[in-house]
Image (cartoon, rainbow, N blue to C red; front, top):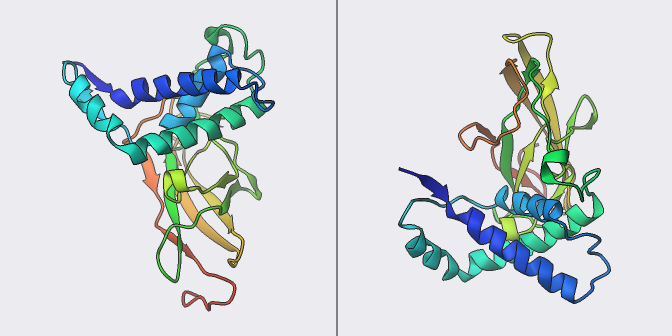
Length: 238
């Protein structure tokens, strides 16, 4: 039995279509449309939408259901354009070469591997998602380095993800496997019209034999919903 995430096919199709459309319009911001940049954009979108798994042979039915979800398609298109702009401004070194030449090589050395961190930023007065909030994830007073450039730090919340955010911090080398260590992160939040807020959380880890580069949806940390308050509203949590 083969299980497949049909969103990979749907997103790939939309990404290629939008690249061709923007290229035809000769938009100045599109600096490259090579296969590597397109794949980076596909990764950017897939990291921000829920997967839809199907068993081989049933994908056609489920695909039609997805295409009838106009809101989801609109979200995919918005995320695609967002990803294209980001990828165009921060291309990989030697990005026009074959994908195998610019992929990250597995590092078989001990490391502390982080799960993805995800959550939502809500308005404390009405519990609605806050769009346009700038989130900076810091460790040791500095912005945490992400696993690759399809993961952004700082991140700005948007309507296409309904105010949600996700970070995936790059693995940190360890002396050996089996070491226990707790890492403390600060999530700094700022949004126009709102009081700045910093949320601190700790992540206990045990070092592993090697660096981890593959995303595992079962290996994630859900951060509690964070409420921020407008400048003229008193924060009852303080």
